[in-house]
Length: 250
Image (tube, one colour):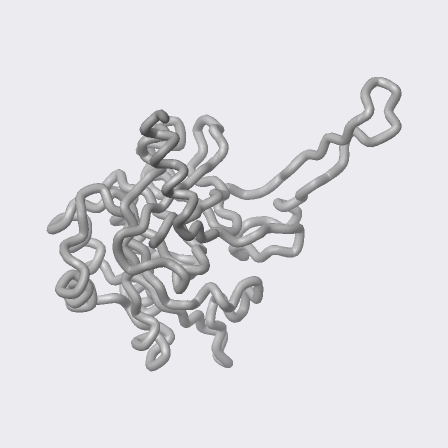
């Protein structure tokens, strides 16, 4: 038997975990995107047409819609966009940093370097080329946009995420390839408020790295040892695209 087929046969005996949300016309998206930007499954060629018995639909959506990948050109003028990343850039060793207990105490919690070092004490160093994901269980708020945003009585947003120091650690001390999270933004809300910008996201994209936002089901994946696969449409010049993401895990 061929080696790759044997490897695939073995892999299919492991757990395959969906990490992306299902989308429909009522799925939430950032309020800055104009209304009418989403139109999924519009039928433009229907059954009964004498030319050919089939159905064809069109799909209209923002690049940053649902579980999506951001390319550096999303925040950085002139930086690489979708066409700069090939199929080898879509498969990663997966590290899942669990900060759910901290988030229960503080919904605006920003992961720290100490959190990541504690993870490494238990599971070993983050490997080269890793995808580092934050598990917060925030995805359980999907598809309630107010809950995802953590809207408080005063109208403020409150949700967990990254700190700049933690990102600097995974990219500059370790050699990660990408990061991901369950919330709508990279930056924990209090970090964004402090900086007056999405400084964490800007840092990631300035480094030429990839990130995937609005992940789900990280609670079903082993903290270390899994593989993440991301698949996005091959559309030129995109700064972001909805993405199908899954993990293969012990």
